[in-house]
Length: 114
Length: 110
Image 1 (cartoon, each protein chain N blue to C red):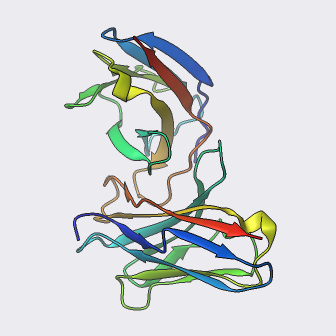
Image 2 (cartoon, each protein chain N blue to C red):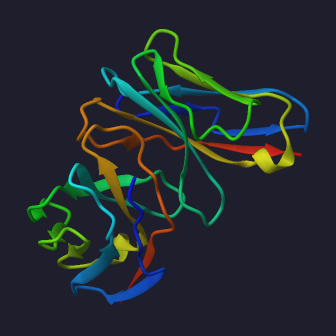
């Protein structure tokens, strides 16, 4: 596609349920990033991949959060046993991968945990 | 990654130049300065980046001081559509994550 695609656009879930958020990067982009953003705050880094390899997961808040990118393209961010504090906008970005390349962001998934 | 400091908010009159400052006094020699902006609820959008020379593109100009401890993003003729949060970020030349701070909320007024 022309841009980074994320689905679903909105996700409402009950506390304790697992959720999976999908990111489809721009075709040919090597690097893929996950961020989350609370209202009124800047994006908070979670993790990123080069191809299928997870390069940095230092931003994942705890072991309920995990991400994968098994074929080096589409990525899934999974949150297990969701809590109300997980409610936020989750954004994915991709880049060509070179060290100076700019990131292109998707529209995000708005997660609400009730 | 080096930390950046930006004013929380600024106003600018439509048609005038908007000059957004950023301090990054702990920047190291292998770190770029990047600027992104975020309009309302959209995803962040790349504006420009530089290492030590001044840079200009169709969106903005980036002026980096000689000691690289601060920089200024210049929007030469601000429009209402430039109202957004502007983030100044330093990032290793080796790539990797971008760390966003709180940014500067720029309001362009008629």
